[in-house]
Amino acid sequence: MKRHPRYAVSVLLVVVLSGCTVGQTHNRLTSLPRGQGISVLISPPSGTVVRAYEVLAATIDGLYLRSLHLIGEGPLFLLPYERIGRAQFEGLRQLKFGGGQPPDGERLEQIRLMSRYPPGIDDELRQELLRAYEHDEIQSLD
Image (cartoon, rainbow, N blue to C red; front, side, top):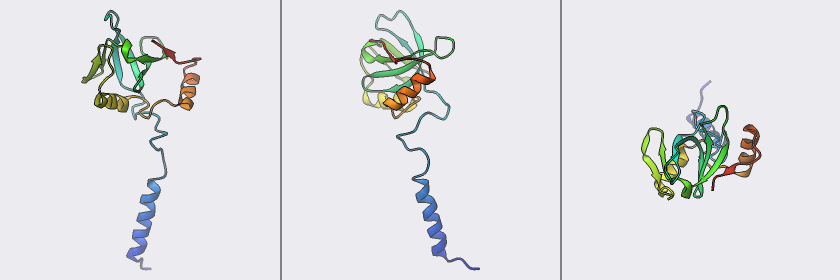
């Protein structure tokens, strides 16, 4: 039985088009392949204490963070940029920022892409995180 070239092209086209609609979309992308966001060392404007956090998401208002200092799963925080004296990212010196100022647009985009949840944290995901980490709310450190 001989197959026509049009048949093969049609099958290939169907496979390619269904690949564009099946699977996760950017709206439901939930994490990096390694399963966690980039680590960051943050000190307050006073510069006295340095703490390690996992970056869950980066927004124009601040960083959603999970503390890495506590045994087990640490609390979830929203840290406004004005409360950051210095932020230095694991292995990425070019991303550092501080002085109470948000990172510039390009740095913010890079941090966002390396966070655990690059699309951000919507209400549904926020509720899932709170349940998973057994918290009542995401603490704001402002």
